[in-house]
Image (cartoon, rainbow, N blue to C red):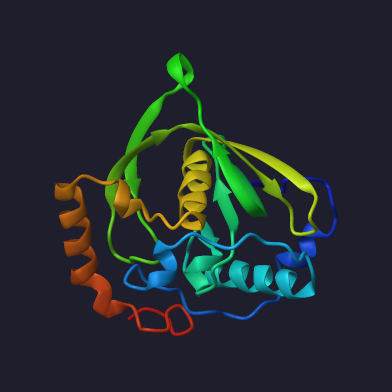
Length: 200
């Protein structure tokens, strides 16, 4: 598969290597249900956090990870996600805002969705198959990324995290009960500090 970064800036490659594994937070923790603080310092500390998030996301077999999912109330997420054309998109967005199609341009697709912060649970959720996410790159430059298919879902899911929303909040009560049951049945496989320690 071909990899695609948001811009041709060679500094992106520096963010994809190194880093330290961090624990992924769970939905039971307040940080995942509160609005985040904007990123204002585009410095070495931010870049180290992004490296940590990339290595943590990879260890957890994820396609995206928000800062709240490593316990920090910052409006930031990273992604390493394929679209429906087989292109793997890889990048990070600070202070994201999502724009979705309206009217006849809005095409909802319902597929199973999961979350690294509620491992083991998957339920269908209808989302638009096109999304544009605007914000800033890790160096503070304005950034706009458009995704289709699975990547569009990722952009919406991770931006939700930055707004204190987990995808379970968007489910019907019946689907949410099913999701929670799935999680409870498999949660024992995931250590408290997963993925620092791998699942059983």
